[in-house]
Amino acid sequence: MRVSKGQLLYALSFGALLPACSNEPEPPPPPSAVLEEGELAPLASVHALFIGHSLINFEMPRNLESIARSLDVEFEYEAQIIDGAPLEEQWNEDHRSLGVRARERLRERRFDAVVLAEAVPILDMIRYRNSVEYVARFGSLTAVEQPHARIFLDESWVHRDRQRGLIFRSTNYRRFIDDDLPKWEKVAREATKRSGASIRILPAGRGLGMLIDAIRAGEVPGIVDEDELFVDSIHLSPLGNHFIAANFFAALFRRTPEGASGEIIDLENERTIPLEEGTREALYRIAWDNFLSYPRAIAREDRLGEAIHAESRP
Image 1 (cartoon, rainbow, N blue to C red):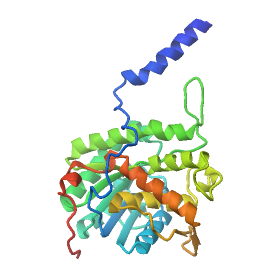
Image 2: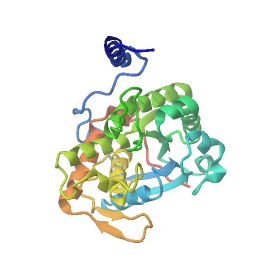
Image 3: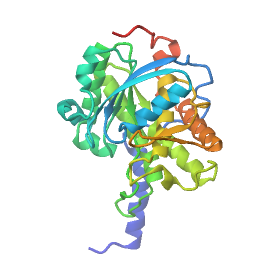
Image 4: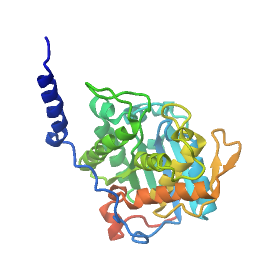
């Protein structure tokens, strides 16, 4: 069947209208003073449980530990890491974990924060791996066993070399990060409804997008190209992991990472790599701006002052 030029233009114009007619949630508001400095009380101690895959890994938490130590706040973590695993497998196959078994630890020890990392791409996880159900399961278990813990869904980034698009194929991964954010938000919202737990978004991918924009604009001293953040099409270099750790620090501690020493922990935890002052300041400022400008990193009870009370752990 031959398609005329007019038919093709109509199809393209109709396709452009589809997002407005879909059930997808509205995109988040543009960056603004959603949170003011000091609006939320910063935390001096966080014990976190990470449940995820190689985008969490063990290098990122070590960098988070380094940032916390240099700012004289207490950070402890445990992790259930299964490479490549969606949350469905994290729930059903925790014997494969390279670290702890999360469900056991939730029943055994107190945590201040639980971070869930779903596999990517998120749309495939929603369609084929029942993402909402398993975020809700972990949320329900945490709410029962750890009623004071904050629960985060880690909004991850995407492969840089995978195309999208039905007619005009594209590898614009920077745009894909923005395109996927409403999907992550929808998972968190639906899982909150299903579980009764308050599930926040930890905007790691959004922060990475902000850093990429700043690098492309020449606003990050010492970083010439965004390739310096990656070791392959999706996994991060020590520099990239340190930046993501700064975003985690901002969300978990509700305080800026600015002023940290900027010591990057490498993949094997064998050495530290000091960041230049200008680079360090730019990375930490972007991470903090990401948190302040993103309302879904907090929940209603945070602003009411009802969440998180320091208690002794067993």
